[in-house]
Image (tube, rainbow, N blue to C red; front, side, top):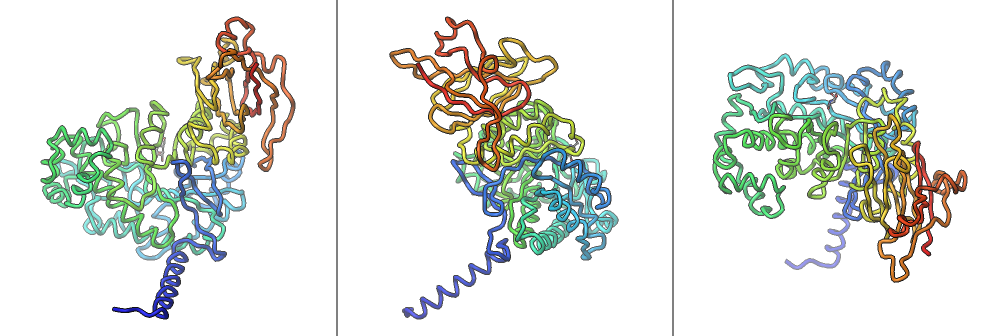
Length: 555
Ligand code: DGJ
């Protein structure tokens, strides 16, 4: 078929109109602004809000804080006092769809208005089908109709208060409510972009290593592993999460069969089976929501007190072992996220940044250790969000003093390259001294000052950004930092401080409070030992959390 120039032009116009409409539907505001979305920067993801990169310096409210707008009136002032820029706030299915198909979004409107009045952004937590495994937030018309909305059954046929992932009625009801919610949020917020993200469900899964034994689940378990999943695993074999790949291989690397045949009738096999179905369910909810308003969506995982011992966390949830299944079965979910309360914090960050997964930490702890962990998350792992849980109870916490500093250096953090032009370090009683490398320098990092560990403090930490040759901005607490050149050359150069200032960033401009020198930069008087190492004895010193700008010279 030959197409004339005029026809080509018409088709292009038609295509442009269709593309424009799709963009409009999916989050372009009335003012032509693209909605909140993720972009890639130096291999890490950044959140873009109102057209600019945005760092979520956040906190999650306790579960029932948003149980009414009246109660929230007591919470907003506390949130304001914590210096967060984003509140993670539950939105409960039973409150927005009290009768089937009849939506009441007054709580959504009130929460968005409250956030705006307090200068905050929101990430809503969709407490839909599950919150911490159970289905307590499902509306009563769901709870009271066990036939239409079946629950999970244990091995003995006992009913568990968890909607079954194997029921189409369940997922359709959740997806319809979530879609209506996203449509409503778009209608009132696409221009201002107060709502920047959605978490779908909360810490899903079933008790470790077990599976649903309802009839629907048994049928799925006896069926063949879906062909498209097998093809995905086979064609991505070399890029699968190593633990998952090893497990599949140990089980015979089968390319077809029932779930038990391919993945074993084991705790791990059960976890893989349940994960796929949780991911598929939540993927359908996300897809329905994104069709109405396409903003970033994530799921969070309970990772318990372990590093991967099945039985110590709800299996089926989005943990690294099953990350591939989540990516395959829930492609509309932008990130799988760890709630980090225990264990090796940076180990968890590494596990959750595999396969370019954006790092969002929706729940964690505060304290001095929380401040240190925020530095590690943003500085070394490109985190988009750091968010202690129960934030309204944090008004006297050290994180509250640290958050304005994070906010002021957010543009620096967002434009730096985590682990390359920016690094963070944490020291504590177990590791009071360590060395990191940044910008051509070795940095000797010591907990406290000259061997004196600060009493009653759990940790010291620093977040350091290289801003020019021999120039750095450092945020620190309870830490001393001595710089020396990595390559000292034939002259065995020693590093001294040319200028050091304490200060802050005000509207993006470095604003010194005072020049610091003398005792405030003196770290080591054993010059003969220090100079062997290229150190002059001068360095940065932080007790309470603060910000310094330093220029070095080498002699
Ligand atoms: C993890 C859950 O995700 C939160 O909603 C809350 O229940 C905390 N645990 C309590 O520590």
